[in-house]
Amino acid sequence: MASIFTRIVKGEIPCYQIAEDERYFAFLDINPLAKGHTLVIPKREIDYIFDIDDDTLAGMIVFAKKVAHAIEASVSCKRIGVAVLGLEVPHAHIHLVPLQTEADISF
Ligand code: 5GP
Image (tube, rainbow, N blue to C red; front, side):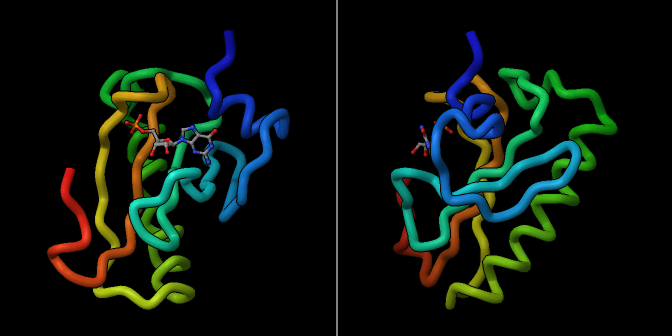
């Protein structure tokens, strides 16, 4: 069965899309840790991020960097926190979380 995130990419589940290209997709987290909390995923479904081939993984980081700069331009923050958790949704993703202070986040 397709992951929730694959269904989001296909438009079967609504999301607030931030960006996409041929290989990657970025959208707001439904349960944000901060305003602008964004998830970056590869369109091709794979569960564990470190099972992704090197080229796709490198491209994903470059895509995430562009998305992070776009978030910085639209949300006031000190920097964008980056996290790979992957405990809930079995489709590799990177969390981009705008941070104001060190106290913003406790995982
Ligand atoms: P993780 O797998 O990294 O532990 O967490 C998955 C993240 O995906 C969570 O932050 C959760 O809020 C987010 N998430 C889960 N389901 C949906 C969904 O249907 N839509 C969106 N936009 N985010 C989701």
